[in-house]
Length: 226
Image 1 (tube, rainbow, N blue to C red):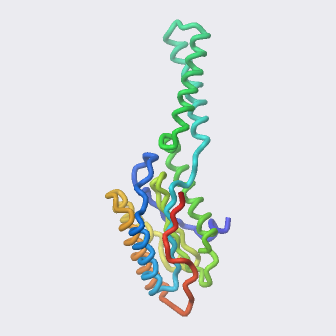
Image 2 (cartoon, helix red, strand yellow):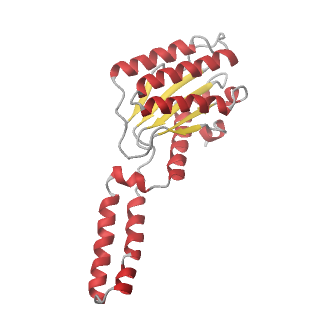
Image 3 (cartoon, rainbow, N blue to C red):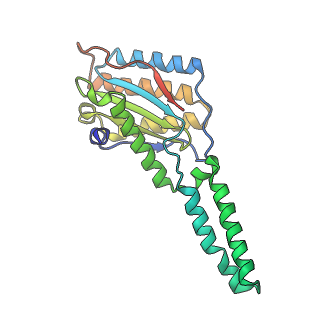
């Protein structure tokens, strides 16, 4: 994937404990403030900053049948070992347990909690890299694109940077910015937190990649994906 090749060394943080319930969406004023912050940050650098806030990075549909399978396989053994129920009764209970587990897994708020954290993080990374390429960040003239990507359902954030940025800025720099974004999100201040994150990314880029004759190549707005 082009985005993956451009995004080696992607810093990431967990933004909030995962509940499956999205954070409150950005208000119109918050979106406008983030757009202004992007324009202001880019005025001092040749870098291109894009912010994406996604409702989720994956649907995790396989979680429900996997839960039902394991619940169905596990249900009979205590009944066989510690009760005198008939085989037919145990089979009926097994089917009921599997069905109940399947129904529980169909609720997206519960389903995401069944997915191991490592898999959730991988999904967010994959989505961030995919959007990095799809939004034109990999195609900037000087390879100076930076994506701040936040997945609400997973409560996980990533920063993806193109080659010219990675050559000058360490991953630790982005991790510190994402850590402060996590703190802001935890206080319910996602919009203001993103404004600060954009300003700090811009400050880093202004030092390492100061403004030049290049034009503004990408729209200065936050992209919200439902």
